[in-house]
Amino acid sequence: MSNNNEPLIEEEEEQENSVASPSRFPSLLQNLYLGHFLARWGARMWEFSVGLYMITLWPDSLLIAAAYGVTESVSIALFGPLIGHLVDKLSYIQILRLWLLSQNVSFMVAGAAIIAILLKPAANYVAFISLLILINVAGAFGMLSTLAGTILIEREWVVVISEDQEPGVLTKMNSIIRRIDLTCNLLAPVVTGFIISFVSLVASAMAFALWNLISLLLQYWLLMNVYNGFPSLRDASHRKSSKPSSIEVEGGESRKLLVSQVSNDVSNVPETSARRRSIDRFLNLPYISSWRLYFAQDVKLPGLALALLYFSVLSFGTLMTATLEWQGIPAYVIGVARGITAAVGISATFLYPVMESRFSTVGTGLLSIWLQWSFLLLCIVSIFVKSKVVSAYMLMGGVASSRLGLWMFDLAVIQQMQDQVSESDRCVVGGVQNSLQSILDLMTYIMGMVISNPQDFWKLTILSFLLVTMAAALYTIYHVMVARLMRIANSNFMHSIL
Image (tube, rainbow, N blue to C red; front, side, top):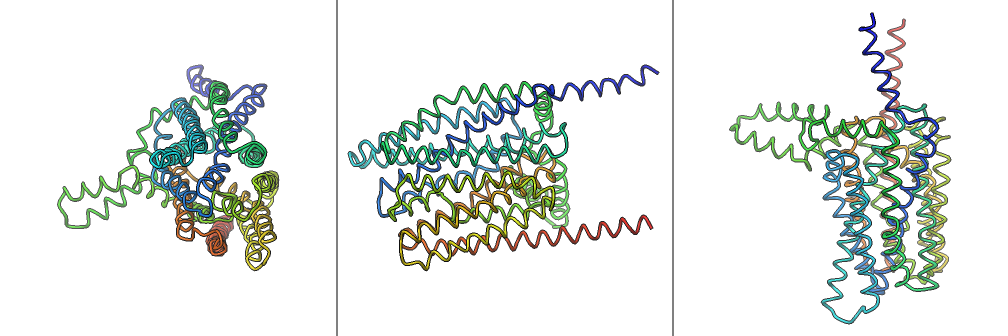
């Protein structure tokens, strides 16, 4: 009798050991949130200031500002799926070290290059171009490293930590993580904008480089405490190490299904075995198999809708920031406006759990994306206002208010992916999602290079609004499909009871 009970006892002990002590749970979460805050602050400082640096180096043109955006977006579009594979393949500790070291060092190099080019902008043409290339490469590499950290924290650690907790913990943690990001988006531009306006651009670049130098060790210490404090994270890391590499298609059930489908299709074609092997090898390349895996997911339509929102200049990104600077809006005003935008987004993280509990995750996504669309109508109206200053403030107002819908929609889509994508595929799907978003973001910067005159920014505004409309329509179709499936499932359930 005792022998039969031993496996049960061992299983219970294993479950207890995989859960952090209840007394330590709040403090460990505080370490997680603080470490995430430090990492996101540096990234948000760079995202805000790089557009101002570029428009200063080449006034009256969005060309080099757009060129940096293209470099960053191309990097993430090309390497995003591979970053997902890397996070899936390596242990949590390896990814943590690689992420923090590469992100902070890259941003320090970019900050040093900015300082050098601002101190002597026209001293030597070759040196100017070389420093400009270094800024683009270092900045893009820093953002790629940030992507690895985003996948690790948002797609992996948050899900693993919440698995052994009460229902609703995942929603709450998602909201807090997004709130931290938006808080950095609120405060970092304000601080940077005041440094630029009241001290100098060079001082802001120095502050940026020093921040990354000082915060590196503190981030590592905080996040290592989290890893060591949650045995479930160690268990998940060991499972990752023991499973087959995700670069091989056999890494997950979805990939197995895809391979069998492709093999059946290929076997029906009268080709040589060498040709079939070549086709199989191509389809199973990490980059190709990642995209096939993504489009096999049930949540691909919400993911596509979210990605479409990145093909937009209606955000305080590089292009809109540079345009507002050209229109004569002071840097500190832009920083404050971006901070207000983030404050609206922060309110969305408080509103989302309430909406999600009342309307479901899918329903909240539908309401939020149409709410965003409604507020962006103000940006369209601003095009027809003759006063340049009034038009600029209306544009900023429309973008700021639309964040309420945008960030609730972002949270709804992320939670659907966390719930519906299997553990073995989460990192890869997350990498492809970020890659897809960067491809659409890249299209924005390409359009910025084609329409590089700030006077023609209204054309980009109209295009962006049309793409938000398309995203809302796409998600509406998904919502109708889900509702129909639920009605069929409920009907079948009632028939089975009767």
